[in-house]
Image (tube, rainbow, N blue to C red; front, side, top):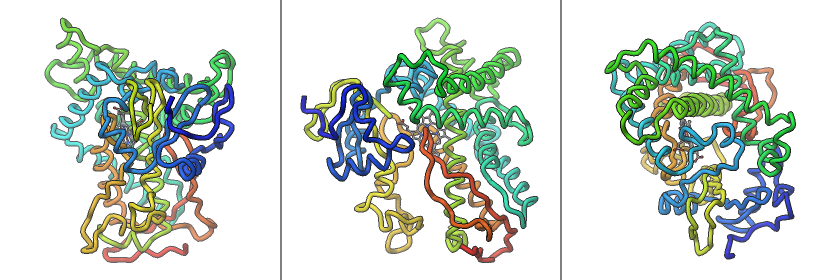
Length: 430
Ligand code: HEM
């Protein structure tokens, strides 16, 4: 009763037949034009509410932070991770304790012997030496960025980095990439609306296989740490967690090895896919806007909730449609353009518009935001000072369309690397 209005659902499928299976986001825009910034949908028989635009998203995620901080246990990704760790853990003590632990450990590693900045700069060295070797040639930067982002988070949580040539490392990264695409995609939707299909060997089964491979690696590293660690001298996040288990042995706590394995998975996967895809997308835009290179520079409601006068029953899936805020016409000078002017006021000073919320907001705001910002800044600034990244002459038209998934990504592309002399302006045929 009084559920936000939206497109009419049909039995069993809900509104799925009205959504593009490969990328439903365009349909979200269409529905928002018709129903406004809050509307209801049915994913199978599961009610969902889509929030569009920065005001609506903030009203829910910040003003009503607790009510909108839950997670569904009916999503395929929750089955894969058994709702443990942080990302898919429901609002409650376990999520709170693990989020707090992860945030404070990431912060402490920033202050430790090898600062976060040093860990990132070490990886930047590898990126630069690879780009130097590739000068004058065209390369696909995908693996380079994935491996760099993955190695930075690996050094913080596992205490060591992988060699870029290591085949095992490459397999792990491919598993993370494929898993992120499967768990938010058409096969996952089918898995969620028709549990009967779960016993068949359909493509969603691969998600469990990829997760198993990554988790096996994590458990092996945890095992090595259990044998080699010295109390009071933590080398990384695993040592810190094992120390917490020891400290809390007589207390009622949610800390255990199985929660730790999922937390490590969350950080490893979230730390790899997001930053590397942001770098890939950014590089694509920079190559095709070389004048810019030249400048210095799903939640769930925890209780019955009310929003804009509508009733949102406990258990409703909440979809804060963050991309809608990132190109909201009333909020940006150039909402559909890659243009740094979007972040500059009339005096040319940096301003952060309220609609800039790629890390979400409220209780579930990204816990790796500071790390991600530092990575993006250090990697880009170093690379752009030393190289011109240019769209290859024979590459045709660039394609900016995004592939839908747990993290969206651009299609593979090639870039031409040129060594840059100080003050040189980068020029591209595009
Ligand atoms: C450009 C890079 C990144 C972007 C755009 C990004 C974006 C986001 C967003 C939008 C959320 C909220 C998701 C939701 O509500 O369902 C989130 C959550 C999260 N992110 Fe990030 N992220 C980035 C980098 C990272 C990194 C480097 C880490 C690793 C430390 C990380 C770890 C997490 C975790 C653990 C959560 C779950 C938090 C919770 O549920 O309490 N992210 N991220």
